[in-house]
Image (tube, rainbow, N blue to C red; front, side):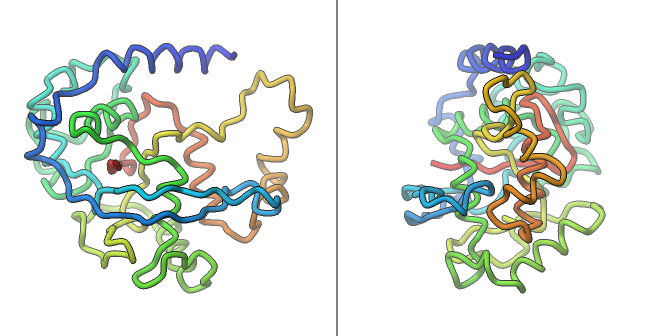
Amino acid sequence: MSGRFARLSAALGVALCVVASAPSEAQSYATRLVRVDEGVVFPFYGRGSANAAVLVPAFQIEATPVTNAQFLAFVRSTPRWQRGRVARLFADERYLAHWAGPETLGAAARPNQPVTHVSWFAARAYCSSLGRRLPSEHEWELVAQADATRRDASRDPAFVAQILEWYSQPRGVLADVGQRPANRYGAHDMHGLVWEWVLDFNAVMVDADNRQGGDAASSQFCGGGSVAARDSADYAAFMRYAFRSSLQAAYTVPNLGFRCAQ
């Protein structure tokens, strides 16, 4: 195991001891859940394999990303997750940097904007406070492939073009959550607002110290990535794969938020 994975494993163990308040104390900031029926997703690498399809059991996911106001309620009820109190192991120096103070949003963080500058550890603790969890990558991708009427619009060029248009635009001031129409499941803002943490964001990451795969790892990067991908034309999926693979659990990013699942 590489040093990076060892550190993350240790951090995960410690994180189990720093979960947030009990669900009964936190329902005031809970987001409405929508049901997602059982479905199938094809991982970015592997559609060509007969066993590539992944069956995702039915679950629930929050209708919108978590907002600044909701995360503020969480840190007020769980002070150890306030800015200035969180250990660097669990969040880098940019944690909630856009807020005016540890318990103050300020002009740069409207209440109904999606909360950003939050680490994976902080997002996980927030969800735990509600008796929920972060969605898995497969769960998130299952919801994200739906448009307003279809459970799977991922092969529709017009739908893909809309997603790519967002990915190609420079980021400005974030809009409030829930302003775009809901998809088939009733979930808003799966595309077009912020990137989102998933529970297993680094599951596809290849360890630099991997001595068992020969040249297999090289096929997942740069030019080789498009050859091994399930669909070399699916640039949107490649962007999500690349972004998740670049993250570490303590990172906080100005356009990275989250929502919880159950």
